[in-house]
Length: 115
Image 1 (cartoon, rainbow, N blue to C red):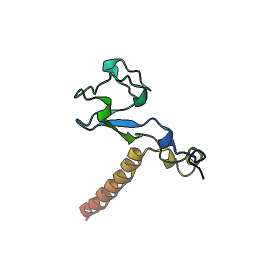
Image 2 (cartoon, helix red, strand yellow):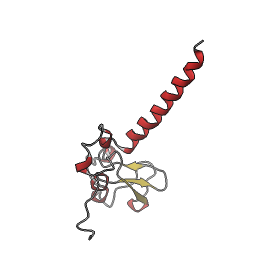
Image 3 (cartoon, rainbow, N blue to C red):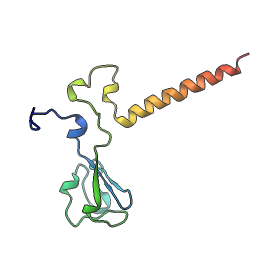
């Protein structure tokens, strides 16, 4: 199958986040850059060449694409399957998994309080 005919996941379709290699600042397209009047939803590639990192002043060339943040990792047609966990972002899935493990641990530890 050719690259043009390959279906893309929601994370691949979302605007990617870019991170400054010098200071770690993340440009998130959904937030834009209010300090420099960059509207929310502006892609990193659409930023003017004069745009600099708001933290350290680095040029655009100092940024690296780290992929989309807060986008479901699956395909659009699969989002309605399961118990709704397919619509969760990777961060939300991690919170759900590790939160459940912590609650289970606390529950079992509370059994020691019973006589």
